[in-house]
Image 1 (cartoon, helix red, strand yellow):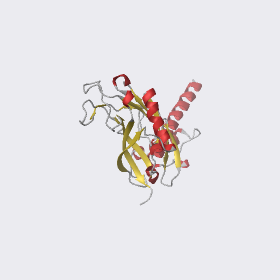
Image 2: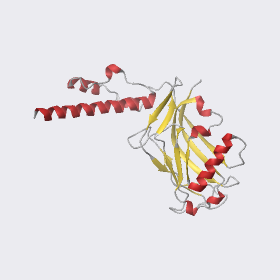
Image 3: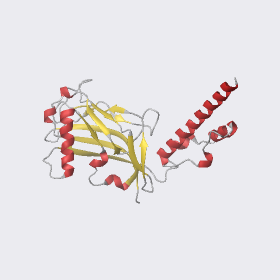
Image 4: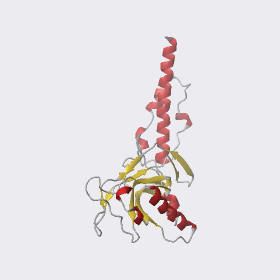
Length: 252
């Protein structure tokens, strides 16, 4: 019986420690703020001390913008990749992306590699909220979908990176590990000249949760065409990736 009580106590302590670890991870993700050593519990603390430290946790702070040394502002942009005759190493990589997508119907892309003008380098705490990908023909027009009815659109599955990098306000780079997450960005374009009709949006509304998260631009995103048999893949000449989110300027 004494062993059972001791084992039960250890399990409770382990649960409290995990709560603290989750809080500290979320706090660092939100504001690059580390937990102070004196507030972090240890397995040797008595149970009353553990409960007191747990009670003092400011859970709402992991979702608050008040502790962030800067103001996140919205951005909304896109990048276009085509398979023009490559004249440089950068263009070779872009042509490789298109050829790989045309042949394998999927491709791994780090958005940082597509930032030729290094615009992302002017910001820290970059968090992507949504991603969309459009298949283009030689003239820069969207490839036609099978139709516009339910299930007939172009189906793009986007898998988020398991590891991504982001910089803090001191311009120090940090690596984050995340859980597996994927979503769809489907659209229909069946009649030339008309606007794209978006059917499904790959968007993360919450900053982070147990199921999904907002990554930075610096990670490997996987884009997969789920229904290539209904698309004239031989006409694929380029892609356009739309992305939006928030970031904080490094210089004011």
